[in-house]
Amino acid sequence: MLEELSIAHLGPIASATFTPAAGMTAITGETGAGKSMLLSALNLISGGPADAKRVSSGADEAWAQGIFAVPDGPGDGSDAARIACEAGVETEDGELFLSRTVRATGRSRAVLGGKTVPKSVLAALAAALVTIHGQAEQLRIASPARQREFLDHAAGDEPELDAYRKAWQALADLDARLERLRSQESDMRQRADYLRESVERINEVDPHDGEDDDLKAKRDRIENAADIAEGVSRALAALDVSQIGYAGDGAEAAGASELLLQAAQALRAIRASGDFGELADRLESLNAELQDIVFTLAGHLDEDLGEADLDALNARIHELGELTRRWGPTLADVIAWRDKAAFEIEDLDASPEKLAELEREREGLLEAACAAAADLHEARSDAAERLAGRVSEELQSLAMDGASLEIRVTSRVSSAAAKGLDANGGDDIAFLFTPYEGSPQLAMGKSASGGELSRLMLALELSSADMHAARGGAAAGAANGMTFIFDEVDAGVGGKTAVELGRRLARLARTSQVIVVTHLAQVASWADRQFVVVKEPPDVPDDVPGVVTTITQVEGEARVREIARMLSGSESEASLDHARELLEESTL
Image (spheres, rainbow, N blue to C red):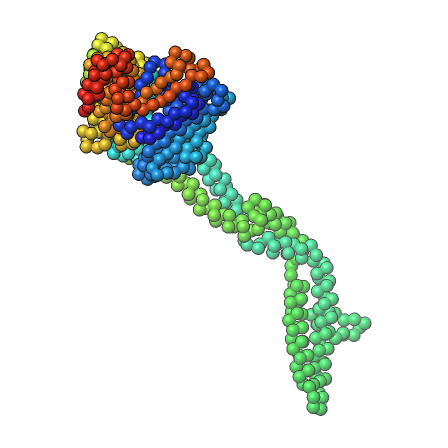
C-alpha cells in the first residue's frame, strides 16, 4: 500500500507530498492542472522511462519518492519484501522507500531503501505493489503472460499450479540429464574403445613391477661381460686360487683365505696366556665371510652372459619403455592405470542400459506432468467461465451495454511429448473483448478506447476480488498489498453510470487501496480522501516559468466546494446543496 508520495521539481510541481487513504482516494482538479504529474511520479519510481523534459524549468533535477507499507520480511509471502531482500534491502518498520532522481541532462538514479539499485529492481518491486490502469499502462494486459497471471490469481489455483510446476521441473531436470547423456554418448563410445585398446596392449606386453630396471641391469652386465670375467677372476685369484686353478712362477700361490687360516693356526699354537685365542676366532670369522664372498664371485663366473640374449633383451626393454611413455612414468603406474581403466570400461559399457532406464523414468514423469497440467487446465477453465461471466455483468452497470468478455483456455498438451508444456502449464490463455453488441471479438488491448479499457479493468479487478471473497479468502489486492490506480476510467461516463462507477471503485477499495484520477463529482464523492490539483496561473502552459502546481487535501466545506465546482463549475447555494447531498449518499 502506498503511504506517501513525495515530488520535487517535476513539471510544474516544485514540491508536494501526497498521502492517499488506505481505501479510496480521488484526485481532482481542472483539466490541464497537472494531475498527470502524479502518474508521472509513480511511473518514475516504478522504473519507467526517465524524461528530462519533465524536470522543472530552471531546476537541475526532478525527484520522486514513494513509501510503501509491506510485510516486514520475505518469509511471510510478500513478493515485494522478497524482491527487496534479493536486492540487499530489508524492510524498515514494515516500509519500503522507492525513489528516483532524473537530471536535466537525462540521466537518472534509482534508490531503494537508501541503496542505489538498477531501475529494473524498482520495476520488479512496483509490479508487486502498484497496478496502474491508464491508457498506456493497462495495455500490458494484452500480453498472454499477464492474462494468464491474472486468471491464475483470480482462480486461486495455487495448489494446482504448484503441483504442476513441481512435476514439470522434475521432467525438465530429467530431460536435461538425458540430453547431456545423449550428447556424450559418442564421446563415451570413443573413450571406451580407447580404453579397451590400451588395456589389450598392456596385457599383451604383460609388464611386472620393476621389470624394466632388472632388464636394464642385466643388459649392462652383458655389455660389460669381459670386464666382469677378468675382474672376478683376479679377485678370486687373490682370495682363493683354488677356485680358478691359478699358479704363478711355477709354484702354487696362496690366496687370502689360506693365509687367514695359517695366521689363525699360528696364533692357536701359542701356549702363553693372552688374547691370542680370541684373535684366532676373529680371523676364522673373517675367513668364513671371505668364503661367502668367494662363493658369490664364483657364481658370477658360471653366469651365461652370451651375446645371443642381448637382442631379445633390448626388444623387451623397448616394449616396456613404450608403456611407461604412454601410461607411466613407471611400470607400477602403467599397471595401476590398466586396473582403473578396466573399471571405467565397465561403467561406460553400462551407459546404454542407464539411458534406457532414464527413458523409462521419463515416461512416468511425463505422465505425471500431463496429469497435473490437466488438473490445472480444468481449474483455469472453470475460473475463466466464472470470471468472464462476472465481468460481463459488471460491464452492463458501467454504461457498456452489449459489452462482454470471453476468456479462452486452450490446452496444447499432448500425452506423446512434452512440447506443449512449459513452466506455467500447457494452456494458451486469451482474453477476448466485445466492446458493443454486434462487434466481433477482438484481442484485449486492441479493441477499446482508454476509458473503456479502464472500466473493463475495473470490472476485472472487482470480479477477481469477488471470486476470492466467495472462496472465503482475502481479496486479490488485499492479499498482496496492491495499490490500484485508475486514470480515464470515467471517460465518456455521466449520470447514473458515474454513480455506479464510483460505487464499484469504493467497493474495490474495501479490500485494496484505490487511487482514481477523475473529473466526475459522482466518482470523487465516494472517496475516503480527496486531493485537488491546482495550477497558478491556471491558463498558462506548464513549461512557462512561474507556473506552480499544488496538491492539497480538501476536507469538510472545502471538499463540498470542490464537489460543487465539479458538478456545475460554480459554488452557488444549489450546487453546494447538491454536493452535500451527493457526499451523504455516496456510502456503501
